Image (cartoon, rainbow, N blue to C red):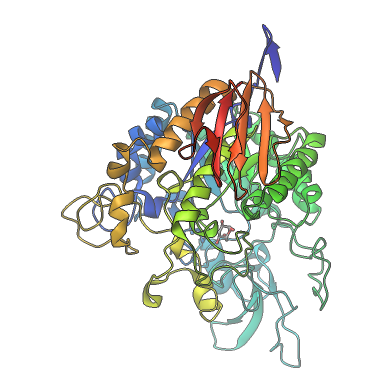
Length: 547
Ligand code: GLC
């Protein structure tokens, strides 16, 4: 950060960027096969520019059997044919830059696909082969090795181990997969694994990407000896996450990134129990930023929200990293739905059931939350459809669910498909403008009929729509907030409210209480998430003021 003529200017774009997350499969379909693709994204770049975001983060677009929506990568240097070609990705990067949009891509280093050439070679090469050393092939326990090597469970449910059947039909060792069996974990102690990913980084940096989102950034290193977790584990010291060796990997990546010009960046999916653990990934020679999952999981409660904001600042300050703010992503319940529930918090494991939600309340709070997140100092993420106020689709038929968590949990966890339904672009037509007409196939997940009212076309012409709110707030943010110091001053505005000032006479007030609150006299309302009532801020409404 430097100061110029009294105005404090942040030097790095990623410290204050608004980053739009594109789940390619569900964003826009260019070729009419019912699946979103790069052609679809390219055709919508003007929309993204007009929305007013600074950068795009693409979920994995690589060659993949799609056992986990592309997080099972078979070739890190090519694009899946469902989405397009490498040449098209190169064009997309160039065109996005032409629109003033930076490009971040998803790097998935913890595991690859079971169809990746390394894993196929490992299976073919047999027990004890060097090919198997790039993964975690371990003999089972029990008299005949019939029990998994340890007690680790997969994040998707069930054992984290699958036993190999060798080419001659005999039962072999087990391999580790912290996610689905189609996602074998790579052995990051192996020098070839490290060399390979360093090369993959260079491959995409050479193609102009501005940075990477690191998938499961806390998980790459495993505790030596792969010990059991045991019956009553210390969650801050699990043998499969946040092991010290992981930091060395990011230090070596950072050195590579820093040899490139253009202020490129790493954002980590660091999902750990304490802010202190997460902050260690953000030391000056490691990753630049990380998603703030404490904020994403926080209930609609101003005390809790303030606590998370304060803890975020306190946790990031010692390492000098910018905070980030995120409300939803492709793994979580859409916050319009979450905020309309009785329990408005989110927890990765247990909230995917069909809890009832009040849509009117959820929408009102989501609009207020948008103004809150966009006003806070630091980076902010917008998941595609947030700007349209899309809810979670809770009634997808079981037969259409594709997320492996649904099957692996025996249907207990409905999975993440409900936040991945294709976007509605126009108010009419079989796919609401997601696919060109006539399309050869329906959207890969069905859109609710009432989404025609939530389409981009329907919202563009309505000054009170979600989309208009996001556009206006992003424009104001860019104009007034992006250049301010990363600091805020809390203002006491009564129970159930959250109120803070930033430099230049800017104030954000959020009212989550049950009664209206007065606004300071003489303040100009720059934007509000809903209509004021006799000049007062109604419940579940937020406003930005110029004092
Ligand atoms: C991350 C991704 C999620 C994926 C998992 C395994 O958590 O966000 O979608 O299933 O990693 O790669």
